[in-house]
Amino acid sequence: MLNKYIFYLIKISALFIMLPMCFSCNSISPYYYSMQKDTMVTHGAVVSAHPLASLAGRRILQQGGNAIDAAITTQLVLAVVYPNAGNIGGGGFMVAHLNNGKNLTLDFREKAPAKASRDMYLDSNGTIHTRLSLDGHRAAGVPGTVAGLFAAHSYAKLNFTTLIAPAIQIAEKGFAITAKEAAALNTNKAAFLKYNTRPVAFVRDRLWKEGDTLRQPALAKTLKLIKQKGLAGFYEGPTADLIVAEMRRGHGIISLNDLRNYEAKYREPVTFAYRGHQIITMPLPSAGGVSLQQLLRMTERYPIRQWGFHSAQAVQLMIEEERRAYADRATYLGDPDFVKAPVNQLINEEYLTNRMKNFEPGKASSSQQVQAGIAAGKQSEETTHISILDNEGNAVSVTTTLNGSYGSKTVVGGAGFLLNNEMDDFSVKPGSPNLYGLVGGEANAIMPNKRMLSSMTPTIILREGKPFAVVGTPGGSTIITSVFQTVLNLIDFDLSTDQAVNQPKFHHQWLPDVVYIEKTFPASLRQQLEAMGYQFEVRTSIGRTEVIKVNASGKIEASADKRGDDSLAGYE
Image 1 (tube, one colour):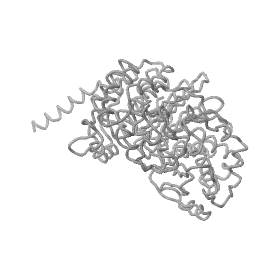
Image 2 (cartoon, helix red, strand yellow):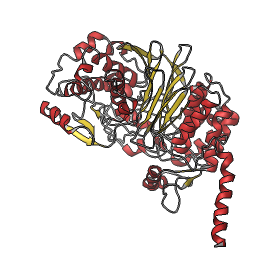
Image 3 (cartoon, rainbow, N blue to C red):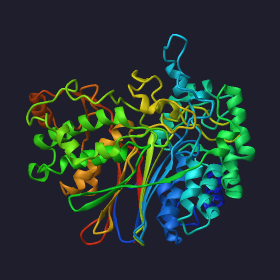
Image 4 (cartoon, one colour):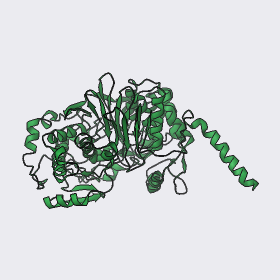
């Protein structure tokens, strides 16, 4: 009996030791937390892929930070608690609307190293060595996330030391992993052992299980260098040296010059009107903004509200629009610093009218008849999204990625973070599919210092000049269609945020000529569409959408996708 009491005394003592870790004792512990999927609040909300990241972001809002402050903290915490997609070794895009009316779009997409070449993944016979662009050191592009964080910080209110503190604490002291995280770490154990030259925090001598504590001291050390030295704490000095040393051990090609020369770029936002709303989204090298504008402009001339949500008429129209937009995406779009894409033509009303001339209600088109070039295939889907709205009217939509789950599976020895495998998002061999089925054209061919094309579509919707909704999702090539459907759900079909996020989704990407659906897609609707000539394939979840909406009474509605561990945190 005495031993039993001693055991519980030790447990209670340990809990008090952990209290300083509880984000200023705000009843938030990295060992005891839960997921919240829906809320209605007054002052602000953060929705992300992990409860701890959302809670940390909310805490920053409560401390007087704005939506950009919260986005920085949320991203940094995701790099610790959601390592299969959250990152400092990858990149992404940010769309923001400030309360002074200014709209921002920030590109911190990864870049090809200077030593990259068009045929670097081909052998002498022109055969693709697909694993080289997916796994290990040569799959990594030059990371952009840290540069993006500091570029965004110029619009923040709090100092960077405050914003990075929660991520450092959790990396150093550890956090309790979820069941999904445990399963993912166990599934990837062999890959971690194969593609790393030094021991990594994700591998141990027994299986991970829900509730186990994951500590990442090497990552904490890197985050402290970033706190102390800013950009130079990552792109120069000890961290840069560790990246280059890792490249040398694994025959990668990222150099010190690649790191020193990387810059995040503010670009001109894609803005357009849709049914009395203003849409703000990401320009190239994200294909998302161009494609979303095409899709919504094609939709605007049809009475889909009258047809109704998940009506056969509305879904058929959306499938056919997706077919045409994805055909254009693959052929014409690439990094605007290298390729002059015909964007103005692609969004021209006359062009879009002509694109829909062979649309026949009640009958499926053939992708062989809807030609625009080479098909867009299936991209890796381990991306993550953050939606934030603060009480000052600032809104932020951020999508980041490592590309594949855990990126290249390679952790920088001594630095503790995973490198991306974004080189596979290039057209490795123009005209041929990669492992995920992605086939691209010359516009997205590999070139030194070029940014690979993306489907990420972080989006903000304004109504009468003020934030109405913040939308985004992971999901590779399904990102564009998921955001498109969510926008229609909110504007045309008047769905609640919960319904807009969690109703079953569908996806068509021109080739293969098949409509992908989730298993909960209505059977009767599928039968009606099959009678029109459509072929279906049931697949795993499509996206994990994070949505915040301001309703008619001025209240903030927020929903986190039920397809994953996604969670929100709002406050009154």
